[in-house]
Length: 265
Image 1: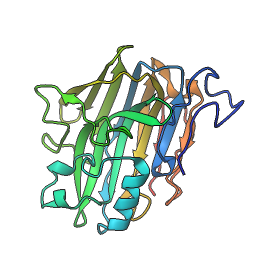
Image 2 (image 1 turned 180 degrees about the vertical axis):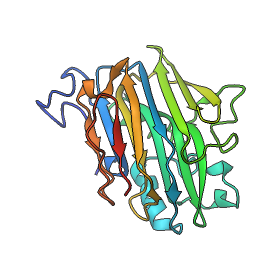
Image 3 (image 1 turned 135 degrees about the vertical axis):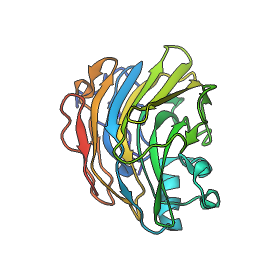
């Protein structure tokens, strides 16, 4: 069920350079709602959004297990998992909602690398715990993590806090060689942190999405992305593809410039 982005998957669509390698933007797009674009390369991706309110269902192994397999996320590295109180570290299969941006590159034909940062809400016993995170997973290294800056609280954290209604912004930059910079900020609360990843892949895919699981999808308020730009141009300049969380038919609104909304499921 993998979604394959690129000219090979969409011949004649006009939204990808025919010479660009198909980046296989997402392991399975049906757990994401938002937009994905391809280009020969991306150097800067930026977005703004407001942290949603999340209503948590009971945790369930089937939902989390399927999500883990489908998204390619490390079961040990669910965003923010280690920082959640109440012993949920031992419960690897939990409902969650994550809002993030990511750059995607390929190492060979099948090893997809994702450089991502944003926020995640982990559900534990019906309670929503808001986190922020950096991650760099790949099919070859599911537990991939960047190196957080010395002043950063780690690769995932709940202190300093992120709360519903907070204004978030995130940026990922690539220096054209092997260095990626990830920065996420809560402008409502005044914190900003960064991390660095060393990775030789060329980023040919860009994502701005809300992620959830295919079963027991938590409820969440609409998430509006604004100022989504890639290399200084609005995301719609790249004729991106909309992505839908199929379990709830959660499809983003039309992309206007760099703005769109992921509706409540």
